[in-house]
Length: 273
Image (tube, rainbow, N blue to C red; front, side, top):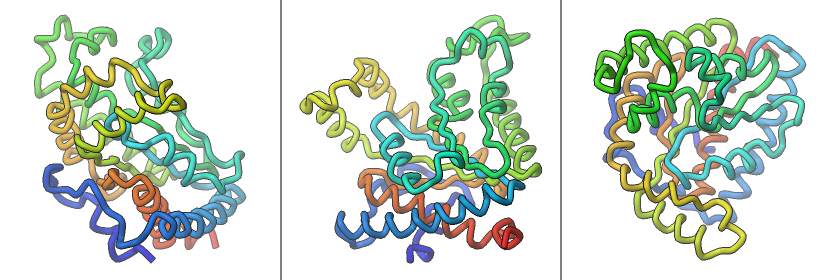
């Protein structure tokens, strides 16, 4: 249904986020998009049942995006038809004292989906080259040997971290985890409107945090860090997809369609039948 279009969202060569669209509707109404999502996620649910019964492979879905990009609602809507036994969602917040007592990938390793299951990372191991890069002072809490001050955190440090993340993903891919990484690409104007809605609508007030406004001032820095992270880590075994996110309903369809179409084409799916 969407196969001819969704391939354009996959990052197979260097991208500039400024050149990537933030809005897509496929020429369809919200009602049509909602109907299409229902059809796609039903098929995904059937595949999940097969994956669970087979117990040999797992699927990891990584979601990143600026504040208000729609990660929570996307998870709720895309995975609605999944059996609760077969999908686990992890939302990674500020590292705990226990987590800081280990290397930065430890908490992500232990949260990986078991064979037969789908795992969704709502914010991911990429926070370690995004938030910590925008706020390098956070790195000091990791107590890394040879890092004695923020001045020690240079480009070589980030290049090494990209390499470590690539090795992490290669390792889990070679051991049966199918990886999808989605960047929900939101425009700055759409974020402004969504933040205003959080203030205007009482039922959304709980989502608003003054910290959102502070981070918004760093928009350009975040975009630069996202762009480099995507370009350095989009690999054939762990591809990034830059998903236009200004239209939430279309973004959900894109993520669901990518999952379904790529899993249909994969050797893994054929081996399960």
